[in-house]
Image (cartoon, rainbow, N blue to C red):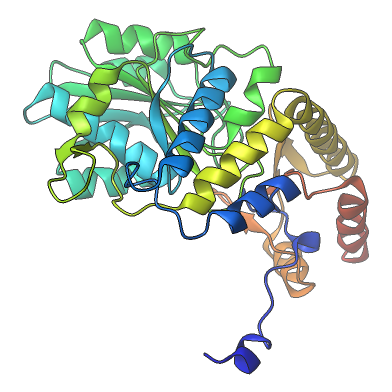
Length: 355
């Protein structure tokens, strides 16, 4: 594609994007990503500067999730991190194993089970869309290598009872993984028990390129101990480094540098302020929709799910609102940093015109 043809294409404008868990990166993160476009953290001996930035980013992510000595790396996103958690659990168990996750778990766990040849058992959720602990316990057995909890579900923004799931995992000698890909950058400012300091978590997914306002790709995979990464490591004989625990070989220096810059600029005060704004926007939207007679799930985190008729949903799509549904059909509005009160007011005005 020549430059003239490229000029006909423009990146997505976020002023009508309401259902995405990605957002515009922080300016410092954007600049850092551009600077390190050609660097490969997958070969740290050759690219030592970006490797140092990755160490700093992992340490900062440890601060976010309450882990003093974190082990991990910056990868492509939540799908990779969730797959790595399943892979590590399988390798540690060393046999035919199963993974128990709630049915609200991200579809990446289905990918992981398929790729790794692991049985995935999906537990029911309760009336508040959280993992049903009794059903998780009923599905877990001596062959369970991993129990999964979600801290900020994709569809309803719910936080599973992570402490209770940790007890289930302990009862069958399984590992506990928390998927906080989206919720990890808002939960530190809430009263939920979800992180390494609250619960005996083994591994966690947390994505800087979501609420963390880093550029894509920048996903975080964190582990409590070095043995987890040892279980993932393979020999890399032609590189200057001897082993590699990551899933990707060549990785994005832009993602690493961007994540480091975003964390440096925003943790903790900037993220706290953004959470407060985003949560206030979610509460505002939910209240306005309730006033209009819609059935709305209480926004525990900055995500609003509303039962919207098909005709209205389709009409809003025709007005170029970028919206999507949950598996059960609700419209989901994710109050990301780019979602402003003015934007939500325009959305409500369009909705009112459809009445």
